[in-house]
Image (cartoon, rainbow, N blue to C red):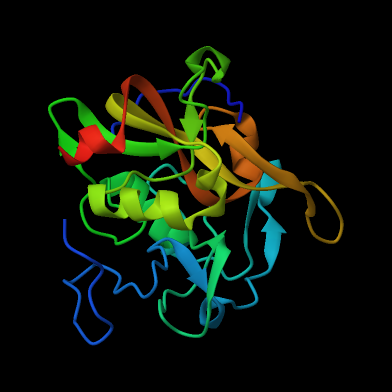
Length: 231
């Protein structure tokens, strides 16, 4: 994933999974069979609002736009209901609001509780080759929120994209760098979809993006192991 440098660095600042009948703490998603907190459920899929061009070529908006459709930086976000547990889990699809919350508040992407943090930093898992850090991108960016230790251990057993290889990081310095979402272009009668892209907060194209995920830049980290993380 490539991204233009951000305008400003913005800090985002071992129990088994609970049984289905247990009630999770407020704000924490009650998981079943490791359904990630950030996963979308089929019952949350709704037709999106109509996308329109803003006046004087100032990007896109919604025809019935509400104040909550944009964040504090005026970035337009996908409007999705939040009804975790309704329908079937769609493991390949990320729920925009829960991913945004998990990344911004450093919550575990699987259980929704606080991500693990110790003196070496916050725990992240990336699908990189731990034996060859030189092959990693020089600008390390991710849309994957951090994890707690129990969920990290469970994820490497359950997630297909982590079974082949994964890197365990303790990240000391990190900053929100941009968003990933659908890029639009001017068109008539309505804007045209172009591609799904990652853009920095200072990229002019961000006015034409309907964001679906936050992107984090990992600045300073140590490669470790899950055994060390649990120790």
